[in-house]
Amino acid sequence: MVERHLRQTLEQLKIDVLNSHMIKSDYVAAAAATKSHPAVPLVISMHGCYEDFLYKESEPEVILHSKQALQQASGVVYLTEKNLEIFSVPGVRPLSNLPHVQIYNGFAGKFSAPDQLPTRAQLDIEEHDIVFGMVARGIPEKGWHYAVQSFNEVSQHFPQAHLILVGDSAYLDELRESTSNSKVHFVGFVPNPIDWVRLFDVGLLPSYFASESLPNSIAEYLFCSVPVIATHIGEVPKMLAVPTGGIAGVLLDQNGNGLTEPAALTAAIQEYLTNQPLLAAHRALAAQCFEKFRMAHCVAAYEEFFDKAQYSGKAIATA
Image (cartoon, rainbow, N blue to C red; front, side):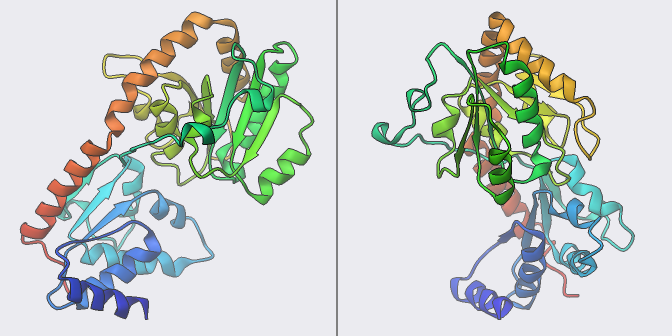
C-alpha cells in the first residue's frame, strides 16, 4: 500500500528525483520509483543503517531487499567511508558503476525565544562553573554510563563542575535512578537541544554505536562553539578536524563494545577543569569547525548530485 501510494504521488507531482534516507524505506522507494511512469531516478542517502543491518541475524531479509534497492539506484550519498561497507558484500552492485558522493548533513540551528531559553541558574549552576554536557539518543551504546562514571570520579574534587544530560528513554530513566550525584542533571527530552548546548563548556559523546556516522550532536556542539570529547568512530575525527590543523577537542579509542580506556575520558574531563587556556583554545577551534556543516553547503552539493542523477543517463534500471 505504501509503495502504491508513493508511486501515485511520484506520477501526480511529476517528481524529477526521489531521495530516500533509511534502509527500510530505500527498497520501498526503489520499487515505487521503478514502477512509476516514467521511472524516477532514486538517490539513496546512507546514514549508518546498512552497516548496522549487516550484522543483524534477526532480519536477514532487510539486506536482501537492500541489495535490490542499490541495484536500482541512480546514485548514493554517504556521510562517512564506513557507510560503504555494504558494497563489499557478495551480490551487491559494485560501487564503481554507481555514482556516489560524500555530503555532510547541514545544520541550520536557531535558538528558541529568549523567554523560553533554559538558564544555568535553574539548575543552581553558577556562571563561572564548568559545564560538561551530552546530547544523544537514549541508548547505552552512545556511552552515557561512561560520561556519568567519569564525571563522578572527578566531580568530588572539582565542586565547580556540572554534567547536563539531554535525552529520554527507559534506559536513561534507570541511569537517573542509579545516580545520586547532585551535580549530574538529567533534563530529559527537549525539542531544541542547542538551547541547552549553549550552556555547555564541553560536549561529550563517548559512543561505540555501530551505526555512528555523522552524529548530529557534534554538529550542535560545534554550532555553539563547544569543544568535544568523543570517540574515534564514523566521521567524528574529521568532524572535529580544524582546516588549519589540530582538532576541536579530544578523541578517545573505542572497540565496538565500549571505550578501550575509560580512564582516558576521566583524564580529558579533568584536563579541561584544570587547564583554562586549553579550554579557551579549543572553544575557538570549535567555532572554526562548524563551517563544514552550514546548510548552504549541503543544499548546493545535493542539488548538484540530483542533477547528475537525473541527467547522467543512469536512470533506475528495471529489475
